[in-house]
Amino acid sequence: MDRIYLDNAATTPLSACAAQAMAPYMQAGVQAPFGNANSLHGVGREAFSALEDARMRVSRALGASRPDEVVFTSGATEADNAALLGMALGQRERRRLKGRTGGHVVMSRVEHDAVLHCAAALKRLGFEVSFAENDAAGRVSPEALEAAMRDDTLLVSIMAVNNEVGTVMDTAALAAVAHKHDALFHVDAVQALGKIAFDVRALGVDAASFSAHKVGGPKGVGVLYLKTRTPFEPLLVGGGQERGLRSGTQNVAGIVGCAAAIEHAVREQAAFAQRTRAWRDELYERLCAHPSVHAAVEVARGDESFAPHIASVCVRGMESQTAILQLDMRGICVSGGSACSSNSLDPSHVLAAMGVPRNLAQGLLRVSFGEYTERAHIDAFISAFEEVVS
Ligand code: PLP
Image (cartoon, rainbow, N blue to C red):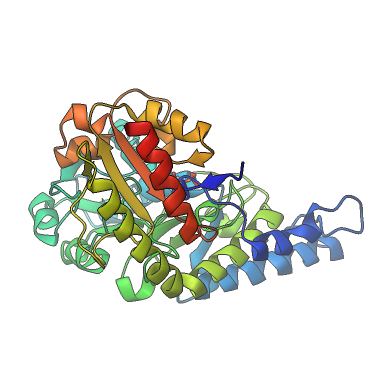
């Protein structure tokens, strides 16, 4: 039985270009490019030049002004944590030097746990955290953000694309609201990269988080884009790598794969979006024709205010876990929202924030497309789905 993988928002298979770029680094022995990028000798310099080449390519693909605005991390969870805590601390100190007090951070209730759980850590550090209201699609409007802003707000973090239901936020407008109030703006752009046009400079953000494994790169590698002169206290301290912004010997093999995958995803973005948006529309139409199925969000045909690669529905009277396991028995991988909460029986915090009733939210199924998804997978999924829910 061929495996049909429709859970690309959780993770993606490696892109051929990433596998190829990493292959030399996976070889055994002293002739392989295994060096520590911080060593002075030739082996180290070889690793350093691979690292800096990757940094330059990532900075171009993201639209950064300079390569040193790219900080490599162990993934988007680390990038999110570093951004939230590091920027809040940095900006509070900068304001303190100007005689200003207080420290208020705004985020949304539909953030990934990697951002949401920073709220508790921020509170332990003496910050106040509040949430901008979202609508039934999980979208935060610039007006809603405006209403959440205070004189002492120093940081706003609102994701670009929701990972459970695909809602696209107006990142440029949200960043402008934050800046009007002299606050910094961070965006978790994990599900935006390679799916919608995304250029950090054009959007005017101060910081953005990305993850390699969501775009055909290896797991355990991510990027924090940090605009030059953004106040920031490093989360990881030690050897001073990444210009002191993130200590720890760099994972050169992973970073090289990350750069190849990000370049490829950005280059292919428009074609990918066009192809998958049509599948998304068809999937919603065919699934919602079923009496027990409701779309988690109202997505019109061709709708660009939702990501092209995600279709999320709620199946009435069936728990996500049951549907996922029954589909798995038929060789099809999908998820019940975020992979991180897939072991939990609690319905998604995103659907709760959108006002979806608990009994409906418990039947959430997320189908997400990637580079290797084919048209035929949609038909195979629909027929398996019909067996499972009938
Ligand atoms: N943010 C979003 C929106 C995500 O979808 C994910 C992945 O699940 C993350 C952050 C965390 O990324 P990573 O797995 O690289 O830590």
